[in-house]
Image 1: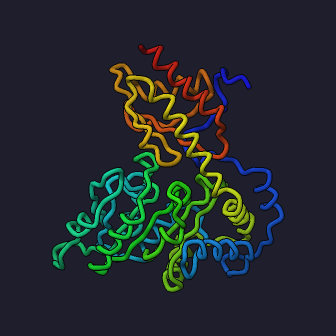
Image 2: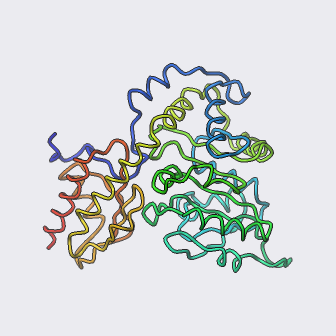
Length: 354
């Protein structure tokens, strides 16, 4: 294929949400049994919720339009207005949910500075507010698995359990934003239920590496999900014949979990190629999963200019994080050949500014 054209996106590495439903997934969607999801009568939605609850070791689950809605509903259920949520400064709600915690839940965020987005039990303990009528009430501890803004870094099971133990000592609720949980499952050979054990709520996003076009699932106790449904209804998240999109999620869970390893290998390949350049600041060992974030020390490097160059000359779309930092995310629509072409085009840009 000729990659040298100027417009349409031919290789899209801006996010793993760029995937398109496969032929098999489309067929599953077209043949899905449907009913009224809001009344609990859609058999495909019910099957998806049961499957996710089983995978995560929870009593029940609810199907939602997005991972962001999962996160915001979790806050609304676990917290009262004026409460405080403890999470890493790089967590998704801090940067990418349009101020939802304050606007929708009326809560404050107490940011901790973890390492690669992973914070410790000691940091939880030092962040908990002591009872004081003048202060917000600490109510919820939040982790993100994997950590988007640190290049898909995985929390290890022992790190999670230590944080959960600290949260329990202070009677705090716990939530895991598992948007890319299955990337961590594959990368660490740890089951989703092991990662989820001990959390009051866990969500997964079906539209990231799993390749579904829409949807996320939030899981927890039956009582928690009943409360989550009330907020879902209030915020307009209830749906009708949603089995058409739930079928994509079921297909993804059946076919697209183990193949995430290919995405991880492609991300590592990209990192290996570009890290050979002396001005690229990147440790190949830091690439845990499918996200590569790299800094360029070149004094003339401009991340936005780099993005425009790759798009205009090669039809390659990447992400930018600051003036000298780019992000590349591999997914099921990206091949080994694509990764090599992107790496070569990036090095070509560096040589041009050199």
